[in-house]
Length: 547
Image 1 (cartoon, one colour):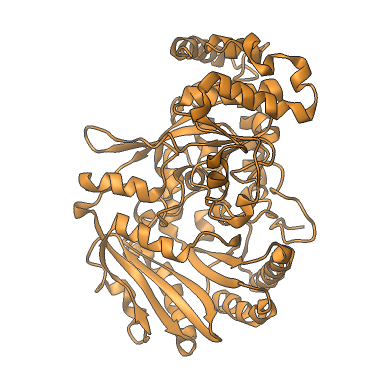
Image 2 (cartoon, rainbow, N blue to C red):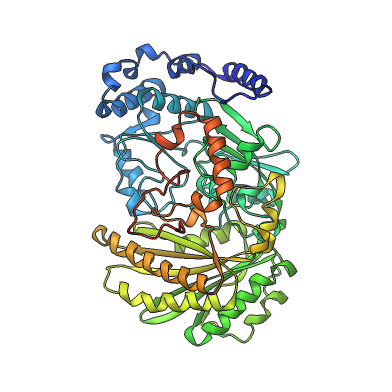
């Protein structure tokens, strides 16, 4: 297949000129997927997808698309259900629920131009697709698609450091652990995920909380350039200056605007690659004081933005526990003054120590095992001692109701959205999340649960839905309710983007209409969080949308 570089240059040059006259769409008038494929060097007439009879019926669309991908790229880049690699791929998702999904084929692009081809073939055949970076989403369809094309970035794992070590270009086939491993020798890092096996793509497009977010902001607020394949197959480098509206939308807007094939991050200096962190575990007699210490730490972050913490409330063997994570952006965290509220608490286990960033990320993989059915489900409340205590107590009141579900391991996690994090959200034109400094700090209240059997799925979802309904009610009664839902902790039933605020939702829809006038990324990429709906709208479960 010949290069499309000259084609993209000519089209985008025209698009830029047209932009000066306020076009209605980024996509050229009279756009034709067949013509665009041919300009990319694909001889459409020789493909199975060229025949209307092979794609006029739904059952033929995806076989035609997958056969066409094989003809263009060869069998090394396309996996079908008859290949040994098929089950290896579907079985490698973090959540067993995603592993239950069977795509028509799996496509492995090597570069952005290959992604352009699969988008155009999808338009030509109307075969839907999903895109997998790390595959760490919990629910079916997020990064794998039944009967369609699952695009996996496993061949796109470059990490490129600029000569001055101020920027890092990351392809989406990397997990964060791989990124940190590759950056260690340069004594720099980026504001990426905290768990090593989480993919770079989904976390960044959903916001992305880092160990360094109090100092530098979320992942989405540290991306300088997005390399994006648009609905028309064009490859564009999106920056604050080149495409300001699209740049804004990509900072937390999910997969609704294009397929990102590279992220250029601002680099963070990390001498020796070292930081400090780990877990301290506390018993029930310390819960009240521990909760208050958490409240104080989140409130005091402006005094020491190197520090961060979360609490995971859980039960093991009938014993209530609080696994509390502490981290510090330099190796000197053990004696930091911000930890003073915890001095009189007694930890029954303590793994805190000086460690490298990449070692820390890989250590977090242990608490995120593969091979279970999984759910994340979350809400946000305004900070305060009483609302935190209420949420904790409601969780432990409700937990016994799940005791007879085989393998069930529910955890309630408190994290802070600190005022320091919120301040960074306004940099370089801001983001669409709808988080206001006046409301901060906030708490993310996140329920995570794994269990063993598919027949218990709705039982678990109903239990969490009821739990969150109770917590939201308590928060509302205290005047602590907040609309925001963190996309990366959203469940299949949560309408995440609806909670970004009406003005931001209107703006996101307007941007999507401009760059994707035929709604390719709403209809042909139907999974994950869409602009107008939850992944699986269902009124039986808590959606996060206030009536």
